[in-house]
Image (cartoon, rainbow, N blue to C red; front, side, top):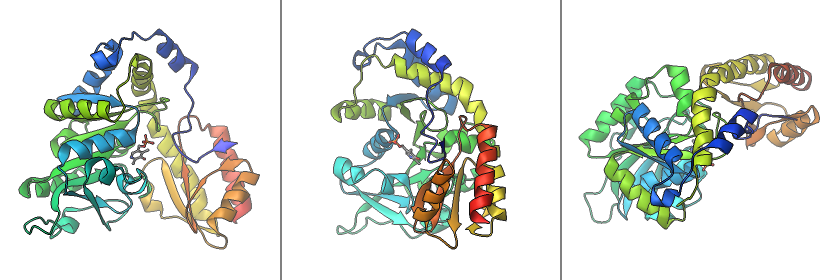
Length: 339
Ligand SMILES: *Cc1c(COP(=O)(O)O)cnc(C)c1O
């Protein structure tokens, strides 16, 4: 099977397993795991934040950010396709007692213009708007990226209105690759950033929340309270560190693979894709004459796995373990089934 369901399906390579086996470890609840401490410092420095905290999942990193940036009864603005709103159950209301307010943007992105007139909290029957939650690249938005200008405009809007900005950067690595943005840019436009090592970077586990030392101290206490205190996690941090050094540079090639398949999809009479929306490693496209479920079955019959993303919508995702010979098979299958 050629698995295009997600960039989370990669398996640790033998080189990665070797650095995991050899990692220096200690009890991280006591702050004594040298490998995770070094990784937290390295990634914080890379993005220009004061501190970082390793988490078992991106969901936990996002929810810690929501928690440290809000008080009970606050409101978080988010694009309606956002991960925090769609794929993290009711965590924000459950864990932090805040309201998520979905706004309809484009390709998963908010804009300073769209945010105008959304702020409330003057009246005691209103929630207090406190945070703007962004995602870069966007997942349900088809892997689209914010430009630096768009982010800077949202950030200055936030500053003017006393709001914090959280950036869900599960795929910030893809966004940086596509837009050639310097990592330190993000600490200038966001109060908290979450990054993920287990998507296209290919580590088996791990995300990180980055912010000020004060926020990370709060997040660390909350991570423990939520059951996320871990022990000898140098094994996991070593995998994440390896992924950063050796797999991050490969993302460019994932984007090339996605683009090649997008062009084949564009040529298929039964498929519809917006080529302009193909910026990174995610393709979201529509079937015209069948349902998404049917198309998934047809592709599975040719040895290719994709996921349905709506009644007529499919998602295909590319990663470094999709080889060029796999790509040839994918192209042939699309031409056979959808022409
Ligand atoms: C995958 C993902 C996350 C984190 O998901 P986990 O499965 O909890 O690690 C967060 N945000 C986005 C946009 C994602 O795609």
